[in-house]
Length: 480
Image (cartoon, rainbow, N blue to C red; front, side, top):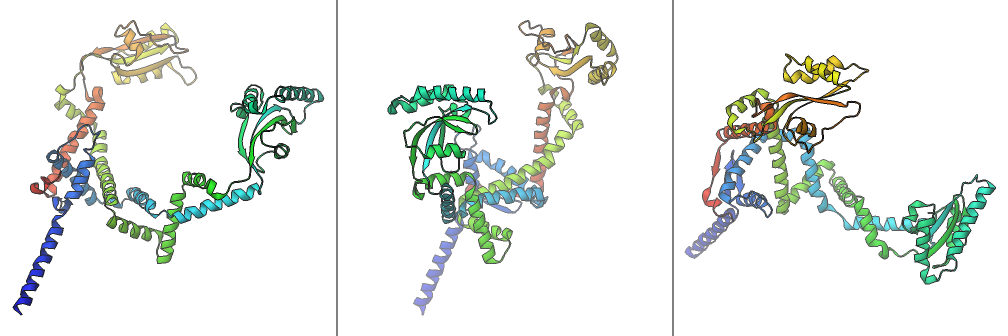
């Protein structure tokens, strides 16, 4: 009895030891808002974002806070239930099917479609040979006069006369030269008259009848059809090959037209019918099974899901708000004014293009007492009418190199030529040089970017206070 008890204890200890080992095979690196991040998940993201070719590589310790911030944004998105919004849900479902469909491709289904394609094509050719031919065409209208017909006939006879005595071994090359220079079918003439391979029913009847009466390597006498006269060179003819000969080409043709997706979708529909569930339910079931057995798919699915949520929450909570907040941008600019400088002065003003010098002077006089943002609209409203446009105005903040007219007339760069616009020969500038930005609008792009980054940092600081974060440093050290 003691021996049995001892054996049970030993077995129990072994089982507990195995369970403990299994639990530590993929330990938790961190917890963000109560959700565990395993070492394998963290390592996957770290390696992918620090692969060869990445310019700003991080070591593991530096990557940890970046990944924490990422997970905090995902947590905020999940709390906001962004993944329930129909637009985002549709995008996520679309990617899910993108991952799922390739795993359901049925080769037997594609083979069946390939054979069906072959059989339909073979049936269309009716058992006749495949022909490879070239032609030279002399166009002639069906209602051509007798004189026009005579000219066309004389021309095709002349072409035939050039070719009829060419040696068989030289015919292909010589025919191509003559076709390139003489054929009225410019499409085929670019390829030496070549029409490619064709079968029964693919050419006009008179032309087809003439070709099928020829032998490979033969040159025809002039052939009349509804479009004119032809001289034909038959390069090759042979029976329609068996399926195996065309199989690879047919498969490629079908794949280019999405046969793999057709196959996978047919598989889903068949399984859904078999299980008596909707297509959506079947996709959910199949995708869940795929996630359980395939680590790469799990990583890709999680990456896309969380990446989409992160993007959407940042866009909603930070980027869009910051871009619209001009008062916030102006305050940010004033607070950080020293970091917004220029190496060289910029020119703030307008370019006036007018019908004559008098109009230019009128435009300048109109601007006295008018604020700079209103210069352009003041001139245009006062001098132009709906029917008569005597002046055009271009307003901007220009640095040297931005505009050839400003470069020459303001910055004195004589290597540049001031642009002259048709119907507006007189050109003048009005404005002033400024040494540094006056408001955030003078450096709007840079300020907007910096303001968004600051708003994002502030927002993430708030998320760190809102959601609990635990990082297990000992596990982090095991990530290589």
